Amino acid sequence: MKVAEAVGRALTAAGVDHVFGVVGSGNFHLTNAMVAAGARFVAARHEGGAATMADAYARTSGTVAAVSVHQGPGLTNAVTGITEAAKSRTPLLVLAAEATQPTSNFRIDQAVIAHSVGAVTARLTTAHDAVAQALAALHRARHERRTVLLDLPLEVQALDVPHDVAQAFDPAPEPVPVKPSVAELAELVRLLDRSRRPVFVAGRGARTPGGRDALAGLAERYGALLATSAVAKGLFQGGDWSLDVSGGFASPLAAELIQGADLIVGWGCALNMWTMRHGNLIGAGATVVQVDDDPSALGVHREVDLGVTGDVARTARRALESGGGERREGYRTPEVGAALAARVRWRDVPYEDEGTRERIDPRTLSIALDDLLPAERVVGVDSGNFMGYPSAYLSVPDHEGFCFTQAFQSIGLGLATTIGAALARPDRLPVAALGDGGFLMSAMELDTVRRLGLPMVVVVYNDDAYGAEVHHFGPEGHPLDTVTFPETDLAAIARGYGFEAVTVRTRADLKTVEDWFTGPRTAPLLIDAKVTRDHGAWWLEEAFRGH
Image (cartoon, rainbow, N blue to C red; front, side, top):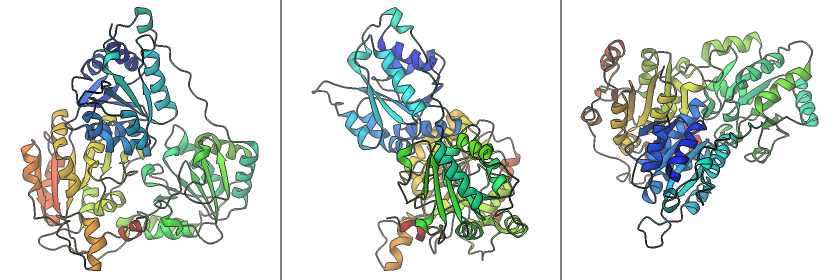
């Protein structure tokens, strides 16, 4: 057996059930070995899309995923998606063929590229050690929540592996959840005991088995309100005391209540400038606590009064056990409860519809889609001026219903994000919310949607521009010719890929969308929504303070 086959079989046997990629000569045998061993291969049309699909699949499924790429340009094509995954600490294994001959056109220093974007690296070096090295890379990706580039030198892939080595698939031991120290736990409980208006903000680190229930139980004990960062949207969906997302997407009421907190606890959450609106959501005199199982993450984005090193679910359960006593009202007063029921959702905030005969208000569009879409949905969102509308106005059933690949703030990832999330949750209707710029960057993956038979809805908030730049520089009088474009018939493009498509300019145009939802859905649907563009989205001014 060759190294390529042995490694492919070993990774599949160790639990890698989905591999995404574009196959070339250097990753052909490895990828086929994984398929033969039972893994599903998802062929993308571009390596950048493949990397983001794998990222989104891993986030939504809670398992490690793999992306397989050709040596050299296959890897460089995937770099933006790999960067997003690395910055997000997604457990992702990048299987990259490697040309080591100096005269090869494909020769680049792949390890340097990986390190430069925050990924960690491993390499196959000998036939005897190849399987163990590959499994070690997988273990690191899975248990350290890292994006790992595994370089697969072409000459090593072609070597013969001893039979006994090829069959050695010893699983690595599962890591033990990090236990908080007695002193840190006692101080956390003391701060909870003295708080009167506590708010919990859960992030990516709370999206673990048991995380939601542990935090909900502790919050009920102390009367805390529950919010999330954008990447954990939906974690507390359906709860009476949920504020939904904290930060730039927060509704006016949610922002007001977070600012009124006397204690803010970030659970597996960075409390960065986006989640805390550059600190503006932290009221004067509020105590700030951060809980994370990685001690290096504590206090990185802002000074905290207490940092607790511990697994989110385990720390919350221990705090509940240590606190004792009767349930406290805290922030959960009848007045707050009535306000949350009436106006915590963005769709309940009154607005003046700015739509015309030619362009629909994105708020009106988003509310209408929220009503039309089945409740069981998974929403992927691209980046741009538009992105607050689907993020704030489209509800999701839980944290597996929203996939937000925005750690690198790249546009063009949203369609691939939704494909990966859809494969992780095939029981739900996938909804891709894109801007026209991101859509045109990634339109080739419409072919992937159609080929996979996904009943996807692709919504393009189309302002015929890079809207963020228009609204950032336009008020200062700068010329905007470089960021505005002639109107394009995006619906026609989608039809060319086998989609059903509709152009929406007014609320009445959504009747076609309603018919699609109630029909057989034999083809995916693209909605080319010509949205109003007179001013930037409400969150944009806040966002640009970070530039």
